[in-house]
Length: 118
Image 1 (cartoon, rainbow, N blue to C red):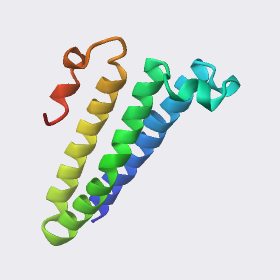
Image 2: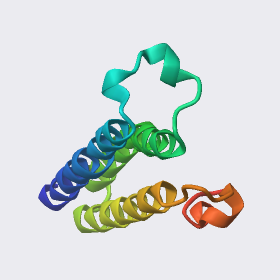
Image 3: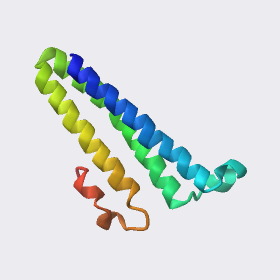
């Protein structure tokens, strides 16, 4: 169980540092602190929108990852569970960086479809 917990903790730290903080950085870069919510809610800059989508998508996938990896590790095989958890975490990091880097590109050309199931 310990290797899987280590992978989970590393992913959660990377989520906090890379995804959550990036939303704040992009909002700060676009001066959100001096704007009202109504002025930015309907049409945020693309960089902010993509950063928020990355963060939201990570949260949407997180519960399945946590439950699945812990249950697999306990019930099936600890080493394989840790390896599968690591593969998932690396693929999610690739997905997040690809998605954030797709500013100004159509979705089909952004490369994000390589990281998702159609």
